[in-house]
Structures are given as structure tokens and as C-alpha cells.
Length: 341
Image (spheres, rainbow, N blue to C red):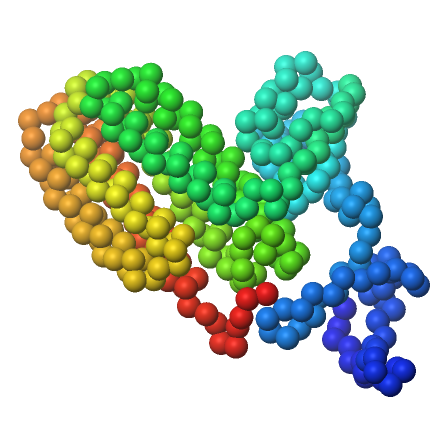
């Protein structure tokens, strides 16, 4: 709708009134006697939202699974529907669902999409519904949960390499799925905040404009999880735990760096965030030093390749911590004429 201007009228000597654009009212389904929610924002603007029954507000979609796509290809379409906030998604299969396909869909939904459950099914349809309440699991809760998993993965990845414990390494690899689940949940939350400014306060985000910053932060955290997974995989392919002391040193320093980075974010401490950036740069330099030393060692080519891959992952984690710290500084600076909701 193009910009329209409305004059404010004085009614009853003490009440200001303004007419609503009829096109907007029709599209929003607003009728005489309906109620509107008015939210005053920090920039002195008002957000008007029609108040409807909660069941009417639920967003529903139908997704026809393509026979030309792989399972993962179709599942990516489902993830996209989850991220943009659909409450109910009906999966339709023109040819009907095979028993194994139905079983796999249910398993993957439980494993990858927090809050989504199967509530109905037939031969050609599977109905998924989100029971997630954003305010029951705030943004900080989700980030804290991701952080704890990452820290435990990091510690166990080094331990698995040191002891040659393949079972522990496999456990680290499996835990990366939990990181991915929380990442998708947070992206869903942040997308919802863009549509509903009032939701920002409910999930613990004071300003709507911070959504982009948090999106970058959780993406970097998800990538950190990927690199720890890579460290665990490489540890399983090494014949002996060569260079373990250097790898443990970097693992300990990286863990400390990640903890400091998260503390700066949690406390909105831009000074500590700057310290984290300096620490990250020093850690990257240390990775390069050890990398050169390993190249000169008399190890098998295979072990060298995996050891260098592990070192590269520590270096990438340090850079992701640097990115998170930079966003923390940006979040800590209030915009011009900006205040909280």
C-alpha cells in the first residue's frame, strides 16, 4: 500500500481519532467493533495489529513433496516453512507415503525441528504442528543452551584425540545435531520478531534492530559446532595422537576465548569484546606457528593432514569468536534517537 495521509480529528473535546485506510482494513479482515492492538515504539511510531482469536492467527501451509527431489531436498523446503513461522504444515504426497519414508520424516522432524510434532496423518498426508511458545524459551535461553553444548563438545573432542577414544569422538559428532536444532529455533524466533515487534521483549531482545546481529552470532556459533565436529572426525582418522600437547594448548585457549566472547555478549561488555578480538588474533598467530612446526615433523603424511586440519579448525573457531565479539560491540552502541521498546 502506498503512503497515505490522514488528518487527526478531535472527538468529544478530549479524544483524538483517525480513520483507517479501507484497503488495509479489508485485507486485514477488520470490521466494525473489532479491536486493534496499539504498540508504542521507541521512535514514537505506533504499530497497529488486528486482535483475532488465537486459532485464527495460526499460520498454515501445504507443502507438496516433489518426487523429483531427494528426501533432503524436500526436507529443506519443510525447514524453510518452519523458519518463516508456519504453525501448521501439511505435507502432501500425490503418490502416497511409503512406510519407511513416513518413519524417516517423523524421525527427522523430532531430531531437527524443536517444537514440531505430528498431529495427524493419512495415506497421502502428514500434518505437523508447532507447540512452541516463544516466551517460554527466550533468546538468551537458546544461546545459553547452544553455548553449553559447544563447550562440552570442545572438551570431549580434545579428550577423544588424546585417548584415541572413537566412541567419544562419535558422541561429539552426534551432538552437533543439537547445535543445528537450536540454530533453527533461534532463526525462527528472530524472523518472528521482525513481524511482531512486541515479541522482541517476550523473548528477551530489547530492540528489534538487534535481530540481524543475533542472526550473525548464532550462525557463527553453528559454524563453531561444525568445526568441532570436524576436529572429532579428524581425530578418528589419525593413527596416533601426534602433536597432542600443541592441540590441547590450542583447545584450551580456544575454549577460554569462546567463554570470554560469550561473557561479553551476555553482559553487553564492549571492553571485554575488544579483548576477545585481540585474543582471537593472537590465537590465529599461534595456530600458524604450530602449523609450520608440524610440517617439519617426521610424521606420516596422513597424520600431518589430519593434524593440520584440526589446527585449521581451531583457527576458524577463533575467527568466528572474533566475529561474535565485533557484533557484540555493535549491539552495545545505541543508535541515534533510539531507545528500548
